[in-house]
Image (cartoon, rainbow, N blue to C red; front, top):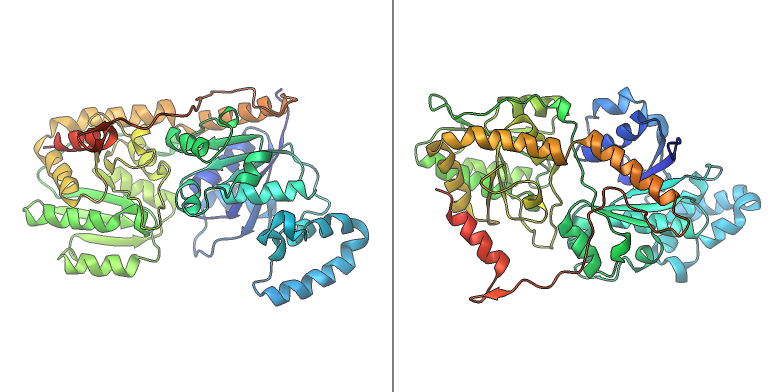
Length: 452
């Protein structure tokens, strides 16, 4: 097709420092010559903004619906807006109030305010949504006549884990209307099938990183200085930072000096800083808060090991494949993570990193100690990590593949994806049981016991 596409990238919040994968797609699509408009409910309230937001002048490409926080103010404002725009957009605005069809998205007036904001917006070729609930909202907006274009939804993690735990039929509206669904891992592709999505409309599409931004050097153990360990991520339960701190404490108490940098912020920060103090890590751990990508790159360049002990949170929330892991592996850092969600699709255990069971402090500590005792493993893991990211998770190659997905979709009159870099998803049989444990659990325990 090779024509300039008009693409709406629809997200919940923009810009958001922790969602560099969205920013990389937006700028990557622009670099490929396509016209990109960002639709977002609101900007995330952060003190820092990624440099690419200014470099690409993205603030002028974002559309926000200006939805008042108070429901009473929404009603009053909606009445005034209807008087102003009803003569021209009355049919669409009234359709957005159809509670029987659109439920809470109608009663909250979200559809109505989006309809006002997007009045006069030219049709899009593609409506590209990040996270399932955003895709669901976009499907309703398109059904109401607010948006036009082929609907593509990317599923990341929380949207197919915690979000559907108590409402497994939540995406019924979206599954019936979306043209293409792009889970970021095979694990989430299988989950979509289980939730009722047509497997013929599912294609795995990875998130990726700009490898060129991460200088590579082979890591080697240096016994004459402390072990430099890094964790990057939001301070929420699923990141497993509590277990990382406890594991580092075990290593330090064994007499192995560690310098542990923790980058990120979130609701658990005060609790985690208190835990570090209680564990006697005040002189070993630095909490940096949020940092721009350049600062994170510097920490990765100087670090030895990235510790990313992701867990399934109490509400069922799970990761996708953390971009932080990709970034660290691109620099050549040795990574330690968990058998969690799609992480094993990136980190090949004992080849390009080490994986341990979730919430296993002892196994995390053992993995750290193992690396100090087996310095010969560092070079091969470091090089394998870089190769893995370059071959499967390089963002420019992935963005080009994304455009091929779009072009194939637009070239298919039936609405079925014609296929581009397809990883087919089929329904899997449940793992066989072995001695009362699932085969997966058996493999995880066997792998973990091989460390040290």
